[in-house]
Image 1 (cartoon, rainbow, N blue to C red):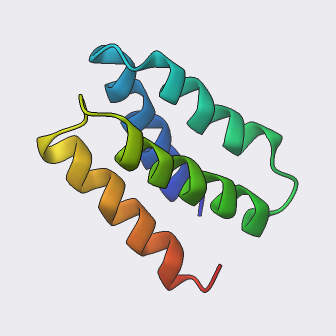
Image 2 (image 1 turned 180 degrees about the horizontal axis):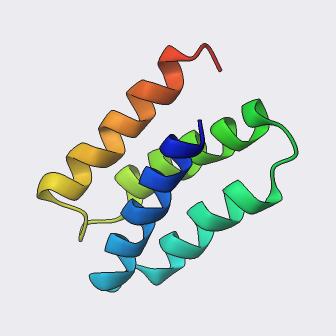
Length: 78
């Protein structure tokens, strides 16, 4: 799972690079603040869904990555 968290952190940094640093903070805080793996994944999925619904700057490969992360989290059964 730590590899997944690394991918999320890298994705979050990519968001910061395009001016979406608020989302970078939200995603990294979800990882830091969670006490269990399930709790972290639920928070990440919720934030990623919010990002997709509310951020018009998210396009192309970053949008696809967010969608893929959501699918991966959902596949865990959380």
